Image 1 (cartoon, rainbow, N blue to C red):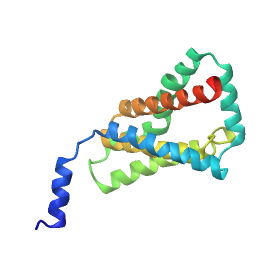
Image 2 (image 1 turned 90 degrees about the vertical axis):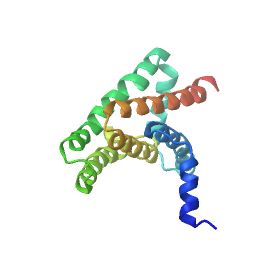
Image 3 (image 1 turned 180 degrees about the vertical axis):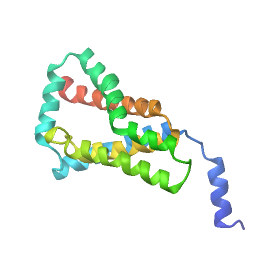
Length: 171
C-alpha cells in the first residue's frame, strides 16, 4: 500500500497545472463574490461609496466606464500601489525571506490604505478591495511583472463592471 505522501505526489503530478495568472483570476472570482455577499449582509460596507458607484454606473456613458474602469484605473493603481514593491523584488537578492517579507509589507500598506481610507471614505466594500489587493500583490511577487498585475486587475474590473451594469442599468 502506498504511503500518504506517495498518494499525494501522484495526485499532484496528475493535476492540471495553472499559471499564476489563471490561479489568481479564479481565486478572485470564486472568493470575491462571497466576500461581497457577506460584507453586504453584515453591513461591512460604505453606503456613501456604494451610492456614488450606483450613480456613476447609471449616468456615465458606457465608453467612458470601460475606458476608466478597465483600462486607465488598473494601470494607474498598479503603478502607484505596487510599483514600489516591484523595485524591491528586482533589487534585493532573489528568493530570500527578507526580500519577500519586505515586498509584502511595502505592498500591503497601500493596499490597506486603498481599501479603508482612500479619498476620506474608503472603498465601497473594504474587504473586497483588500483581498483583491493581496491577490494582485501575490501575482507581482510570483511573476515579477507589473504588466501581469495590470492584466489581472483589468480583468477583475471588467467582471465587476459587467455585474454592476447588469445590476444598475439593466435590472
